[in-house]
Image (cartoon, rainbow, N blue to C red; front, side, top):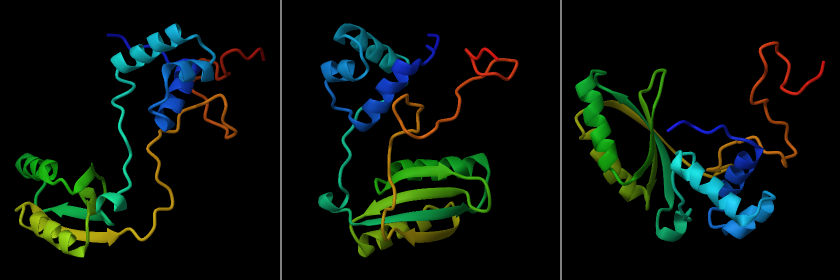
Length: 179
């Protein structure tokens, strides 16, 4: 299936849906200045083409008993395919890990971890150390979250901030410019 070009209405819909995933189709249609039927067709196309991966609720970690958040930097013993695959399989089983990033530089992975308390963190660290693939780990605890958003920085016609241009013509001028 060919990917559809995102126009300003698509981008505005995605921008709104990132912040308000439970918005009704009628409200979304009104906010993007469409009637409900075309809005729903656009939404279904965005879902079908994979622009929208899923809808989910964002929970308060402390209210569900996960009061300690940490980032764990991991260096593997070896970098062969077998070791990397084994570590990846472990990470997929560790429910404490909410995100794992393979990195460039002096460390191999960054794990984003939520646990209840220091005792739980110690148990988690034992799992990591006993995985049989890890050479070194280093941890940092989150004291305060300064900024945390899940919304991607999409170009939006109603934002006050200047966004980068999405495309330019071959002669370097913006599309639609007369100069």
